[in-house]
Length: 122
Length: 501
Image 1 (spheres, chains in turn purple, blue):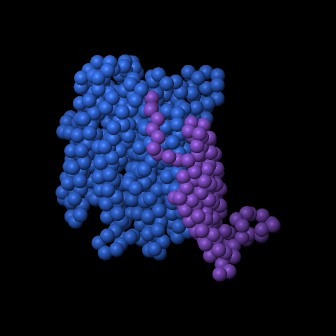
Image 2 (cartoon, one colour):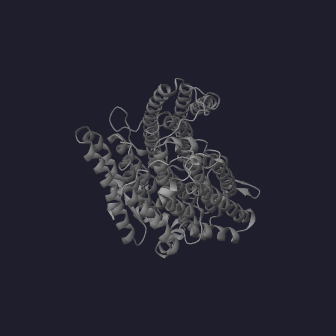
Image 3 (cartoon, chains in turn blue, yellow):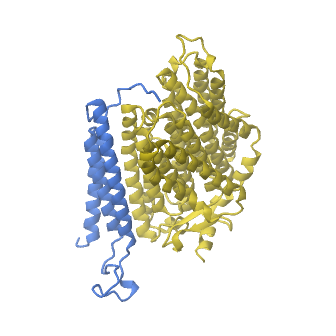
């Protein structure tokens, strides 16, 4: 129970499931975007949890961290993956909010309903 | 051969230049984006002609697995050429349209082009994810740029499903990386079989779910109808001919390289394994896609669901996994791209002329524009797979491979034949309506020299590939042995050679 991987894994899984529940049950676009954000956070936490190594140091060369051999490094790659995915998530959320505003301007509502069909002209 | 990196870099550099240039000289920026796509087409055709054996390009001097490698073989070159050709014609079509788009639109098309080529050339799982996300973001924005609220609605629906898919893909990457310690496709290859079987099964299912979304496979394709309908017609054509093509490419690459030759052993319940999952998903997709297309009165939705049906057939061929079925899948993908782009161009102009996408109100419009009607029929026969038209050879080979396969794959013969009959009915029903007695005076269809050039090129391609398949046949014949990866010219040994092992 004291293993951080366990806590991280439970937290990541819970976040993903809460987000999935939100996506499946809501029709309000803003709540959909919030739920997707929760899922993205969950999966980022999952990447960190899945690649956690116990008893290693931060992979930074220098006197402060006192890293002598390659064995004592933590793997830096997952950090890069998570950073990339956070940035992508930011872009997706920004675009989604912009689309939401345009949708609201066109229909006057934030609910996704499929019944209405506007004529298309291009 | 290092030129192949320009297939990704050139459109990306131009994508950053176009919006700045667009403030000063909008016309020049649009022309430049067309020229970039055209130059890329020429480069990819040049690479295709001079191609001999597969090669790997190592990026930035970092040897994989620390760096990222691009892999160029016949499959990726053919698909890059198709994507470039489709985008070039799509840009030309949009430029000749009456609806004038801002320079940002062309920036997004160039970004889409970058990301699709990235998906096709990369040899790294995470790099593939990044390019998939760029393709997603640019295509949502492109879909939302047309038809006011209809476009935005389609884009939002696509976004929600595709974001779920990307979360699934990322979770799978975390599982694979923590077990195998690498993200390079060649190094992972077969490694999934040595993983904890429950974890491997979870990773495979998550990856399949996200690739099914890219490839428009049931039940991950609920967004298809409204996204294709809401998008401007040039973008609907590109979604079908380039984005779905790149999705199918990722499916081919990941199922044959990452899952490996023994992919049936990763998940197994008795005789039910991962290839059965792929096969039955394909069957359900063909049936639901063709049935949905059959009931549509909206021409753009009809074409969208017809694409779904074709993708289902291709997934069935991928699942059969014999030399012949891979050949058939690649052939069908390429010819489908050509014919569907032609159909979307014609339908787009008809929608603009009549102000509606309901084809029952298009009666008689083909009488005044008979060449347009004939091109529509050529495109329709090309998708359907009538002999002497391009779609025939792919479908014929897939049916042949299903005949030779054992077990439930035999069912593929009946499914594909039944789907072909349905396709023929709903396409020719539309074509018939075009030549019927008009109820009201049909409007003028906006055509021009650019439009005629684009459609004539595509229609000629459909007929020429149908009558003389030999040049394409010689190229596609190389693919199955290169793709299986278990020989000297295969994917895995090429990448390992480049890594110096």
